[in-house]
Image 1 (tube, helix red, strand yellow):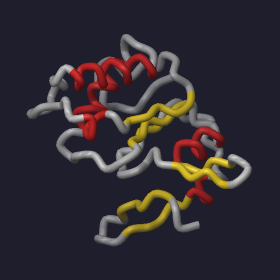
Image 2 (cartoon, helix red, strand yellow; image 1 turned 120 degrees about the horizontal axis):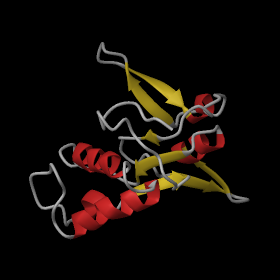
Image 3 (cartoon, one colour; image 1 turned 90 degrees about the vertical axis):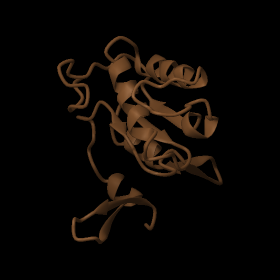
Image 4 (cartoon, helix red, strand yellow; image 1 turned 180 degrees about the vertical axis):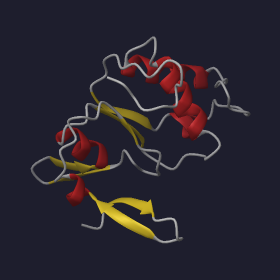
Length: 148
């Protein structure tokens, strides 16, 4: 009940959208979700191998794929990483787009990022959960709502 996403309410406070709340939603209309939050891909395995995590909960409720990070990532790096991932989605399946952007980071260059992207703490924690197949964005605006 105390695990989930803290949503900014605009007045400096936050409201918790708990995993329990997400587990009650019908999310079958969502093709992809990117969680740009610290430890968004972290999970807890209960005895009996029941996995509890934000990506797992979203996928169980119908989201086809979730991109999230296992640990905190730089606010300067994460937006450029995700934008590059979205751009690559126009030509590659989801899983291949993630692998491609991570390879760019290994080589030390990430489009739009000013700095050395080789540090694995920047890029290695990003995980794709769910469907790794092709997903195209609106080609006129890569930052727009995803289209299936």
